[in-house]
Image (tube, rainbow, N blue to C red):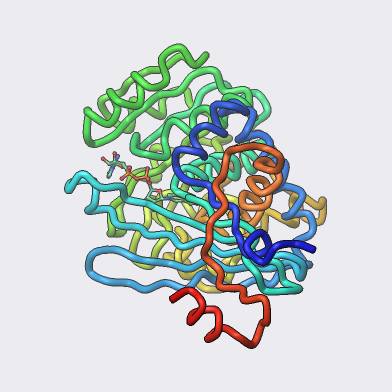
Amino acid sequence: MTQPSDKALVPFVSVDNMMRLVHHIGLEQMITQIATQIESDFKRWESFDKTPRIPAHSPHGVIELMPTSDGEAYGFKYVNGHPKNTSEGLQTVTAFGLLADVYTGYPTLLTEMTMLTALRTAATSALVGKYLAPKSATTMAMIGNGAQSEFQCLAFKAMCGIDTVRLYDTDANATAKCAANLQGKGLTVVACKTPEEAIEGAQIITTCTADKKNATILTDNMVGPGVHINAIGGDCPGKTELHSDILLRSEIFVEYPEQTRIEGEIQALDSDHPVTEMWEVMTGQAMGRTDDRQITLFDSVGFAIEDFSALRYIKNAIEGTDFFEPLDMLADPDDPRDLFGMLMRAG
Ligand code: NAD
């Protein structure tokens, strides 16, 4: 018989263990494997419960819960977005997440998700890039050189054949950090002084900035035909990155329209402006890029199924390893109705 204490212990992946796991598997390999998991979950889109994430806004930032279930497993992520945090020496985005068994409701995994969010966001961006970016793309402009940026660059290298990244950030120290971190990682890295310089010759433009306002990271005249834009920084009401004229010239692709219309670049457009859902492109029900001159825009906000895929990936990856600690976070008395007796015996 399983000991009650064994039954109730939940595997917990700390930040340290997540970092060990990434080094064990290899960063690019892990991003690629998470992308495969996301793609297979997007291909069974209809089997998931879906809801726009649940935000708690404040003048300081936002705290969000992102739940979903496929009927067998349930997952959620807790994540914040506080652009002002970096000026106080704190992260803009931190997260943790949980997976549970739908049959018992018991948690089956608790994990840090700050690292994992960077990995899954990069995996999603590059996966979408595989469907939408020009096949001949070799150069990506990376605008916003903060916490997510290196992960984005390496994901596009691993999955879309990018060999050159052109970096720009309003803070030159962020660009210098990103350039230094990417040394020796198999990319030609060009640090740029303006966004215009960064997009020169780039077939893919990634915008990943953090500012709680309707910013204009790209203006219409900066975006030429045939470019793929991977816009990931605009992910909250009143927090966008692109001039609306770009949206009007682009074929727009989204994760889950009900959430993107609230949070994405398309909040600037009419609520019935046509968009294509990426799961439909992945299942062949909708077209991705159709010609060389088309501007494709991935209006990314980050959706719960991507986190669910990442959580399931981690749960499998840690099985039979020591990349986790068993966590005593669930009271589970021998007699399920005797919670009180369990408490008294502990005294
Ligand atoms: P970060 O604060 O570490 O980095 C943001 C960088 O943007 C900073 O270096 C800042 O100097 C720079 N920046 C701000 N305004 C700029 C401008 N006008 N031009 C160029 N650079 C500018 O944040 P992060 O963790 O890298 O996240 C970046 C953004 O991505 C955030 O807004 C976050 O909410 C969003 N995000 C989205 C997803 C998703 O799934 N779509 C996932 C994670 C993070």
